[in-house]
Length: 350
Image (tube, rainbow, N blue to C red; front, side, top):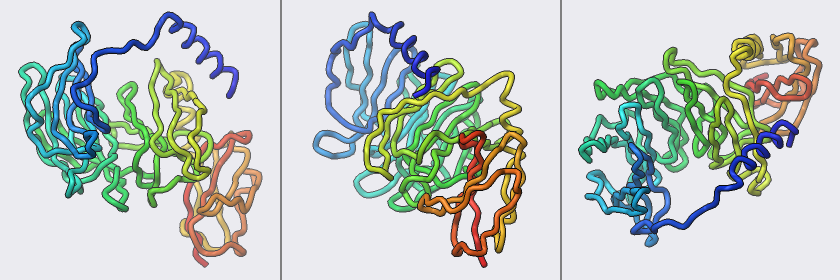
């Protein structure tokens, strides 16, 4: 853990020394995977799996002033668990997805706390699923990815909250994704880590930024190590803190915490230029892999799909002969002073 991160965490912990966890009133019924959100100082919990392992449509609100829970009328949709929700800037919550006892769901609902009313919105246009990704940006709701059984999705959609219509957007350029972490900052949405195409770990912890104004994805530097299943994250100012999850490759629960600066006002364009100027070709490749790279890139490495390193070369070489490699999918990793900056997939076909 580097000194900057240690100092940051020390400052955070020092500012919280007077804070403690306090026991509050119990929720009326225990559950896992509820959909939770807050509006105007009131917390809400809806659906989730009960202690009897049954999906529910229970709906509660919590008043922190009186430390009290209230049981609200049941959620009008199907009982479910593993759903997801977000609150739009108009203080209306949007939620959906999940699984009932017999199917994966794609219905969508909005909750207006001003009059405690539910409205069924247009159904999500893709397949039903659970463990999807969802966030709000620029006043609209964006959702997709996730899985249904062994099918992993990379599709992406926008719900126009004003017209109640869905639009198909550009899919995630990386691997299909399930059970990662997502967050919003400065008008962008972010997708970080999680399981990939085969519902297992990816060789790198992919991080993507979505720009709703351009309907475009930008790959940002990966987090250290392979991807993690079900990690967590939170944003403080311009920095995201990433932690937790399960390392499926080594089968352990890491306790590492990493920090990444999301927006550097003096350097964000430079970082994006590095990514756009660095790429591999042709794809598929036959007897050699060539690349173009930003001048900051110092090394190129080639791995197979299981993470075995086959080649390492100075970036200035510009190409590597792959006659001796078997046909299949490989990962080309670009590094700056031993720090991974970008990873691209290439298919070798002789």
